[in-house]
Image (tube, rainbow, N blue to C red; front, side):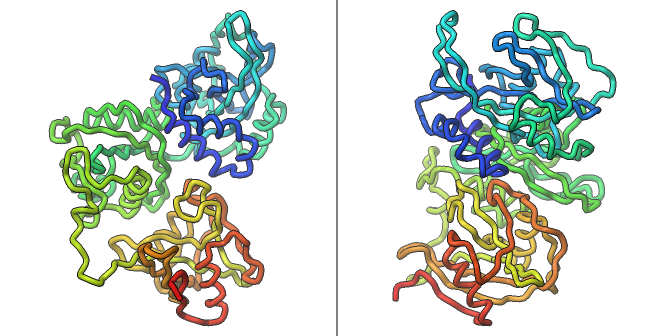
Length: 495
């Protein structure tokens, strides 16, 4: 079956999180994704369809080009997707192999681009009466790979389509947009350790978790509930291959459709930060019937039950974020009550308030840190806001320290944190009330970086006297109050 609409949209959203300034020029692709009747992965959709390209860089820093006979142009290898392709990146690897004979095992994804395209290009294709094809657009998603052999790779050209190959210096790359990005790429970067995990959910809104063996010092996160997955191995062409191999090895599982969801950052036993690519997939089976080769057991859990488990905060947050993005349902397909229905009713007159923590980070020059929220955020899309998060089964300062590390790579110590403002607010009448705690970090280490591009697309320090117009209203109030030394405010409540 063709690649899913959701997989393509998620991939494009991840790209735009890194390149928000390209949203306008990719308008044709976004319009096509919004047309529900179009099969955007099918080459017979002549309103425009997706193609995939492989950008391959060799050990000398040169980029691979091929002469496409049909167009007479020198381009990177690439072409149409096929129903057998399991992902967009896999389609690019298949085209590379078909056109040049270079096997997927000869290349590895460039660190940081395992699931996100390096470049997206839209170009017009002329009509071809011989094939009964009208003029149309190609939405080409280009994935970046490193040729990991120092020896000259054997090439076997697809003679009916390719007339030859050429390794060009990056400053002579044929595509202007690609050339611009390649010239900014640190070509000497070494491939980093990378893992991949599967976020598996069912139609009841539950998530499959894996209880690890309790072998302290021998395995990562011993005795904790986690996602199935593991580290990339040399034979894995992409991180999707990694997660599929791990699912098969650990539990004999084969999920038909896995789509990239995001990247989690975790620290190993040595304190090194390891990126983990998260792939989401639906499965409605019985975990008791699986052949588990590692760990103690597999079980389904609703997001509301995670507080009872010994589970990493980052894993818990991933599950809740995914659950929040799924369609709401009051009753599951099994007829069981939803987690909302299972929650005990509050006492008469009592309303639970959501607790949110916010980082007030002020540099010596007086400027304060704000982040631009992703255009697809459910709350305040494309709007500036303080670094923030919701308290889970943790105290507020622990939540602040975790969110600062996860979202921006900042390390803050508990003794350097002080409460500087509390804002009690609602967005509109009838909404759940929220208590926003603003904490100042008197000291920190690191510079803000985009660790969760699906949530925040830019970090910037602003002059409190010249804050952006598109700023969350209660954040603007809190910053002004903090500047005045006031500890408490209220917003959104009826007068």
